[in-house]
Length: 192
Image 1 (spheres, one colour):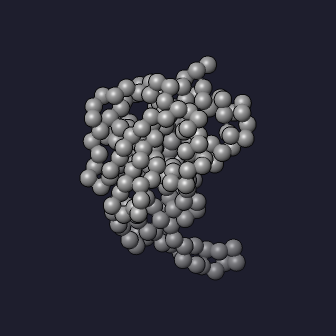
Image 2 (cartoon, helix red, strand yellow):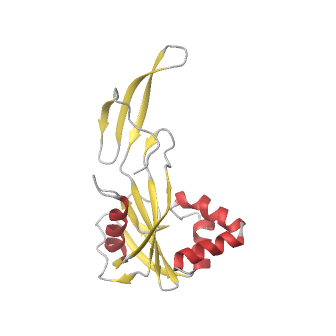
Image 3 (cartoon, one colour):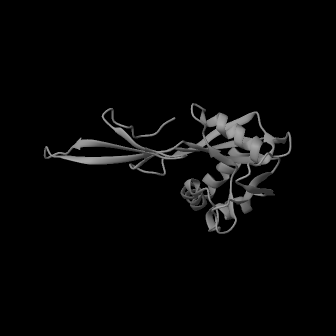
C-alpha cells in the first residue's frame, strides 16, 4: 500500500476511533524551534469499476447519516492487514453479488494530502459474472444498475451526487483527449 507519508517513530497515538486515529509529535523546524504536528490515519479504501458485458455498474446508495441518496462504485474500507485487491473482490461480491477473474489496478491516490494517511485504490473488474445475491450491510441501502460507457462518463464527471471523487479528475482529463478516452474504454472492456 503506497501512502506517501509515514507516522514518525516519535509520534504518539492521542485518539483511536472506529475509523480514524490521531497522531501527534514534536517536529523540529528549519529555524531550530519545535512545533506539534498532527496526522490522521484511516484504513485504505478500494473501489471497483465493474464491467458486465458492455455495461458498467453504478450504485445508488443511502446511508443512515446521508441526507439523500448518492451515486457510487462498489467499494469500502480495507480490513486490517487486507490487501487492496482482496478488499475490492470482497466489496464487489458483498455489494453487487459479482465476481471476476480479470482485474486491473487502474488508479490510486491519497485524498488526504499531507494530513491524512489514506490511499484510495480504484480497480477495474472485467468480465464480471453474477455469483449470488448481494449481502448489503445494515448500514447501507444499495441499488445496482447497469449503464453504458457514455452514461458512466457522464455520471462521473457531471453528476454532483457521484461519491467516487478520487477518479473525477482522471476522467475529466480523459474527456479532453478523445484518443485517451477511447484507450480507457478499451481498457475497461478488455479490447486491444
